[in-house]
Length: 193
Image 1 (cartoon, rainbow, N blue to C red):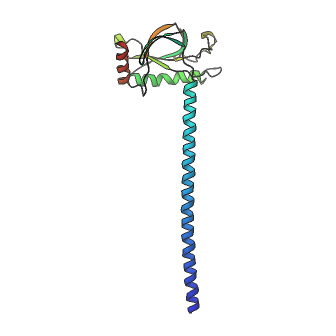
Image 2 (cartoon, rainbow, N blue to C red):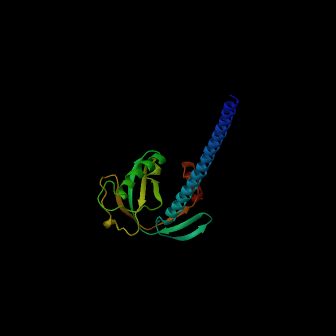
Image 3 (cartoon, rainbow, N blue to C red):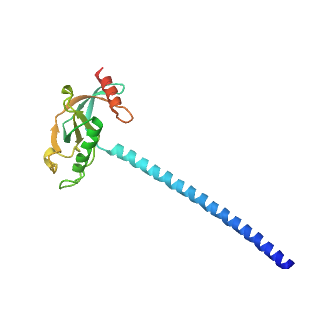
C-alpha cells in the first residue's frame, strides 16, 4: 500500500507539473500569437499609409499659375477645364454627399458605357445662387487633362452634365482638417479681407 501511495503521489505530482507546463506553454503560445498579430496590424497600417500618401501625391489636380501669394493665400490663374457636374439641393454637407454618388458612378463607369475615368482633386462645391438664399449646390469633378469634352463618354442620365469651365483667376487658401461649414466660413472671410 505504501508503494501504491508513493506511486500515486508521484503520478499526481508529475501530472500537476505537466499541466503547469502545458498551461505555461499555452500562455506562451498566446503571447507569441499576440505579438505576431500586432506585427501584422502594424505592417498593414504602414502599407495603408504608404498607399494613401502615394494616391494623394499622384491624383491629378488642375494646372494653375500663382499670380501672387501671401502666407496661405494665393491668387491663381487656372487653365480651362472640363468638368462633370450635378446640382443638389439641401445643406452643403448632404448636397455634397448626394452629389458625389452620381459623379463617382459616372467616372467609374457604373451607369454608362466606356472605360473608367481617373479621379482628380479637388471635388469642387459651390452654392448656385447665394445672393437669393438658394440652397442648391453645384458639385463638380474635374476631368483629367487628357480628356477633351468631345472625347468623354456621355452620362447615362440627365443628372450629370459635362461642360467646359473657361480659364479663370481665383483666390485660394490651403488649410488642414475637415472642411466643416464653420471652417469654410472662417477661411472664406479670411480670403475676402
